[in-house]
Length: 334
Image: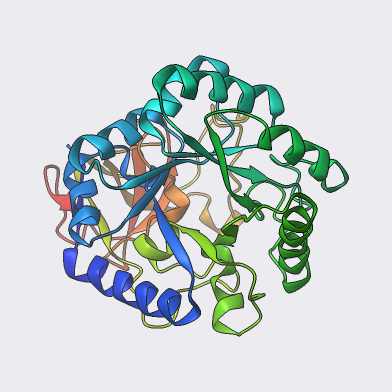
């Protein structure tokens, strides 16, 4: 059975880097916990780091957070579906929104539950996922300000989440200007400009982040030290907070090139093979993990003699080359 191991010391080191970085810039931030899938042991590690705010897209995960740390501010980071309004208000202190009908539904539910539900209004800034169009923003805010049980605490945007549009100084200045215009028009204070995610951290490090952006949502930087802007790892951070361990369930010498008529596999891919590999054999191991568990392209074997080839739903094939390197069925690979 495959399992994940979390290295607490490396998680703490990454957290320390982020705390120092954001404190210096006067930026508030929360941790995106989707990766943890509501696992209470892992969530407890975040609670033990004194993280005050956690973000997720699954109600069940937010419910798990509230069960172990009611004081943590929970944020539902996608527009809520109608069927989830009741539980969003119940388990999320804050939600991201871009539709007036939805916010009206949340308002009614908040009044029913005797709560005040906080919202961040998402703005379309070019990546074409969720977000109110900029020219409609003023009228949108006017209607939301009238709703009982709703408190607007921010304006936000998502970039590099669908079409790969990268955050830039110009785009984030525009987001900050929208906030200033709304505040001036309605004489209301909007605390947060939530324009930062892991991909925007290099802008902060390079002093290119507009001062108005004062809230970040961070997941991959904490858990993987990922520099999503330039590639590689952010300075001073660890890429190996997590390690996957899985068992070898088959090991044979097999041809490198398949035999028979080939079309796309169930994932829609058709592998290509070099002419030099025809007739060649190598040792191949099947390990007990698959596409339902992991994305193979992100796996980096500890043993550099092991190469990830391809995966099906529940099994992954690795190539060991011209030797078994003393691996055998039942051994654990990491």
